[in-house]
Length: 388
Image (cartoon, rainbow, N blue to C red; front, side, top):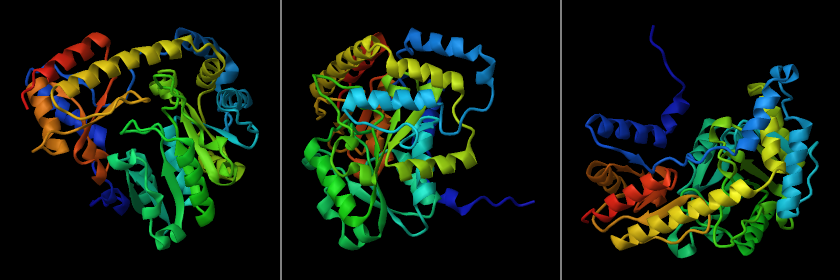
């Protein structure tokens, strides 16, 4: 039998982090002590009070059954309550909130609900790879919005051709940004909302990193601004905020029709989030913020260490106000991939080539500050010793 796979799979590049893992294994097998700063998976543990809430909920037989597809009402109320206290945004938990099996799942499934074959999807470049895969899996046409240093890694909406804007169905934004660590201000969000309303485009905002912030910075929600409720949906994950990447829980909020459409897709493709995990998420959303503040302080220390080290060897980088990433220029004479390879082979430090996030990421690399402090200090010393 000759097995023929779906042609849509050929539209995807090799998944970035799977390829990084392969290269890392090769180097490890040669005996090198590898320090991975490649994947954004926090090393800091989930706060104990969240773990305890899950343990207690897991013992209750009602939580062993299929969960509600939209999420526990208590979970949706907690998510909306968090939005009100954090952003001043009032949401209806019955119609404007939906539980997700992590925001990645929601981001991948959302185009199923809104993108028809031939529709253009406006995608940041560089950007989270799932924005692209969700587009092409559903027959959409990607239009890449370049994020450039000279524009503070914000898309220049005036560059989008009128014909593309007319045919576009969906725009993805992501601030604080992965991979560039850039942030967006009120002026940009208002401009993006107006652009989407003027062109009848759905605005989808991935704000997974909104709580990993430094130096007094406060990341806004797109839903804070006039007009957003007419066109926008926002995705938030507990993964980074509470170091819960493995728990797979998040939520989408915003325009009721968009949230409802995503919920309709989910009723047909998954069975919801384990209710004990939702109870843990409720504990996080309604509990104390001491752990979050402590973790942000740790990430800030790591940020300062890494930025100092990179600048010491001549790599240009900004001091990010959010995320646990540092986005740095590669040295003259290197590509993103060739510099990543040299760093791995000569220092045993794994980083991510910017080109893996899109064409406009060429010339940059991303450092994830997600190893214990002592390992990060060791990585920094190895990088400082590198002769470029």
